[in-house]
Amino acid sequence: MTGPALATLPALRDVIARHGLSASKALGQNFLLDTKLLDRIARAAGSLEDATVYEVGPGPGGLTRALLGAGARVVAVERDSRCLPALAEIAEASGGRLEVIAGDAMAIDEVAVAGEGAHIVANLPYNVGTALLVRWLTDATWSPWWRSLTLMFQKEVAERIVAAPGSNAYGRLAVLAQWRSTAAIAFTVNRMAFVPPPKVTSAVVHIVPAVAPEGVTVRTIQAVTAAAFGQRRKMLRQSLKGLPGALSALGTLGIAADRRAETLSVAEFVAIARTLDAGRTEQAER
Ligand code: SAM
Image 1 (cartoon, rainbow, N blue to C red):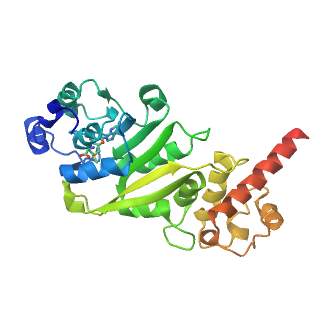
Image 2: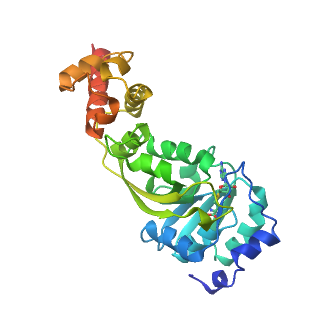
Image 3: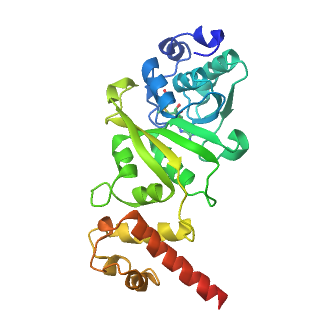
């Protein structure tokens, strides 16, 4: 750990007992206590020396300590006020490198608190994890304000993020993530590593923004994938028929209308959305 004061903090198990942090299911609380695993998650984010990290849901602060240990400045937002005294102890030992914000990560102005260029690292509460990821991937401007995402998900969600066409896990989340970023599963985490253990295996996903193709709006790509995967077993001629201009876009692009959503590559979804957006711009200019 960086700094002698951090090294003298009590063991996480003692912190949890002393502050009475019994895990709340409603807040998606499954704590990590294994310092080797917590250091491994921090390492998956890349070099954090002198970087700023935005952490959602620090809880008793295990991952927060690992991030500080890796040399980062951390801005952490926690909804459970019971955790604040434990986090204040870490802030005290951090030499001014930890700022804790009491609040709801779904409602916060992240850029205002963490600043442009922050890395986001979190063992996410499962009940809001996907919603937060979608929020981070649907920034109106690209490149986004964040530099990278290193996030714990249920393994099934992690697989939906990195899924390839043709697989069962391939759907809206894969297209959105792979349109705008490069995403990979760093490693899986046994459920017994958590206190209390969740029902399923987890996985850490590392995501870095890509140069997303121009001429495509979030709204349109979301509309195309919602329609296509809303009826994923149906042919595109059926699933896209309610989306104005979509069937003629398929014709223009030479994409057979008897294909199903799960066979389309991310590039093909992007091409359909771009054709629809171009059509709209032409209409507006007329
Ligand atoms: N980071 C800790 C760890 O690894 O042991 C705790 C992880 S636990 C899975 C999720 C944490 O997110 C809990 O501390 C919970 O109180 C917090 N949380 C849940 N919903 C939240 C929200 N909307 N905004 C901020 N924090 C939230």
